[in-house]
Length: 284
Image (cartoon, rainbow, N blue to C red):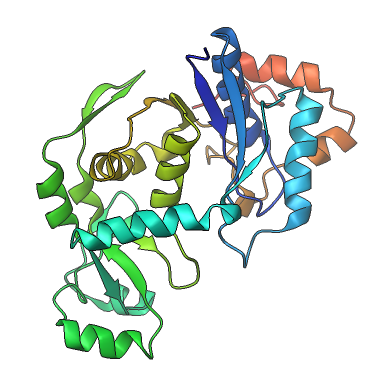
């Protein structure tokens, strides 16, 4: 019986870079050291940005690194009924409401405080009556938000365990009424990732520190949907020479480019396992 299962879950919106390699390596090594399974999941819900060539690139890069996954590759685009069922459960609990606001509407609201992921939704659509909701839903694009105050009250006090930070008391209220189903997609990250981790039997989530705060929301969803709570391991992020975390949008060197430039996978992994980037700078 496999007692440890980890996963690497990239979005195919570009080629993998060193930061991805570092995270995938840590998840892979964590599982292998414990005789466990390492899974690959493709988070391809964003059809506007996801590309099939990037899916192939992810597999190619992991193969080159020697980070081999177990079982079939799971794709979120093939799991839409799972997300729809969970949304219906939350809707039946009276915890979801349609939101018609644009980003401009939210930014223009003087009452929008900032949370871990930026401006917290000020609840503009939360108080709309059912008749107005139905009328507007028939003609206006809308997302579905969770009424965080109601949800947090229903769930009660929640905690989760991080291997570095220790026991954490969940604070989903700091995120406000997050989106669980987008206007342009049938589900949003928070819900999809939480459901997939449970469905795949992931016991240990190894991911970057940039997703630490998201765990507050994920812990709430686990409680509401009667899902198990994995152990969490949020690792440090690799940074560039300017101290910025490596990211696609900032043009971080891709693994494909490093490979084409003659970098050897074994040497690269050795540096990453030592906490270094390819140019020898320490992670922060």
